[in-house]
Length: 160
Image (cartoon, rainbow, N blue to C red; front, side):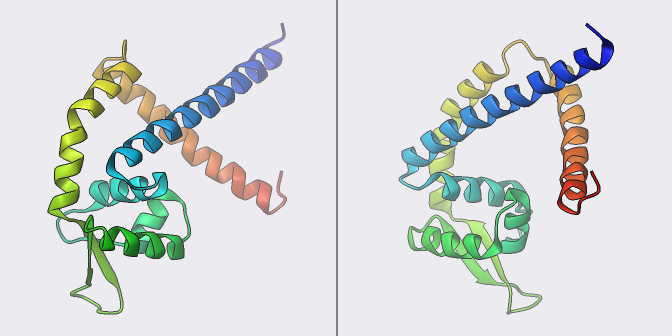
């Protein structure tokens, strides 16, 4: 098999592996969400806020950018999460036109209750990978993600 054909096969295999991983992660997130009585997108919003919050709250734009979804969807869903007492939405101290969001103690307690199950699941998913291997893999995936955004932009403006 020629070198180009081997590369093309490796790329196709990689893409199908990513599709499979994405599908399985969606099912996992759906399962976590069901345990909290929320939807899978709401679970991802809570996880994004938990990840991004440095103690001052998180803007809806930051959450939308992290999840690559429309800010209006974030606003709609965070209002629902607030009504469920899983999220606090407060006007930004810097500019009252903007809302800063943070997890409530109730949300943090619920997530903590799931932590043992999440650790077990992570151990299963990443079995056979040590810290160095996972770090190496994350660096390569970050590079591929960056390059795929560039490729997507090129395709959308007709450069490719």
